Length: 252
Image (cartoon, rainbow, N blue to C red; front, side):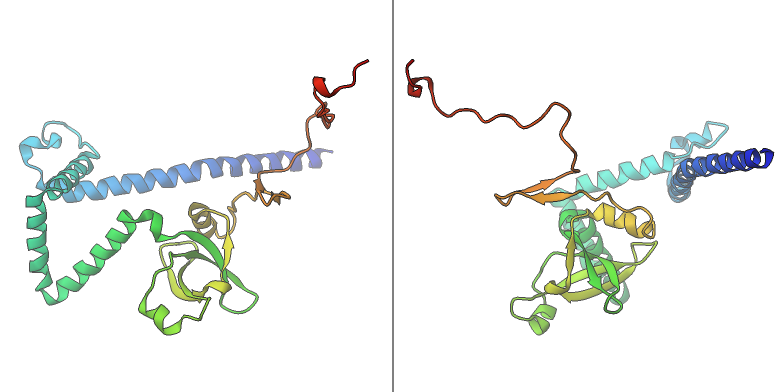
């Protein structure tokens, strides 16, 4: 009896520890990443702040995050100045200078196109999550389906009624790296999960899967989404009402 109680007590302690670890680990990792980002930005920005405007000069301790605040204000101010005609002229002049540098123009052009695609067209970057058979038949990989665009690849390889679509197959657990593939539309199995749910599934290596909702289709072709459940007690079928009005009833 005592051995059973000891085993039960150790199991409870282990469960308590795992529960606490699940709660604390994400918070600790998030705080560490945020603190590291703040320190990295401060180390870049604070050396360029004049001494009289730096609060670290007057306080006995450094102020974390002040460099990050200054960087956000400067980036917003640059965006405001660039939005007018004078700012655009200055930016265009600087881009023309960079365009004349053999090595720098390629790096700058690629980075600018990536940031414009990611930040300016968030809704058009990926439109759906799907499955493709990769790396062999019978093995399925999760992919992010890009929007259908006419490219030289489509002109060379498209089949009639079955166009090629660009898909991005991310790697686990880092979804920012992966493979770009062009797959025929008929070979993609579309999924109903969102892009965020697909990213969570990849980062967690399949451990965090989105909730599946049961779907039904009525006789009219309308789709019903949501979990199924029995009707509450007392909510039986309603009796059919008579379609005859008072004027159509026979007189007694």
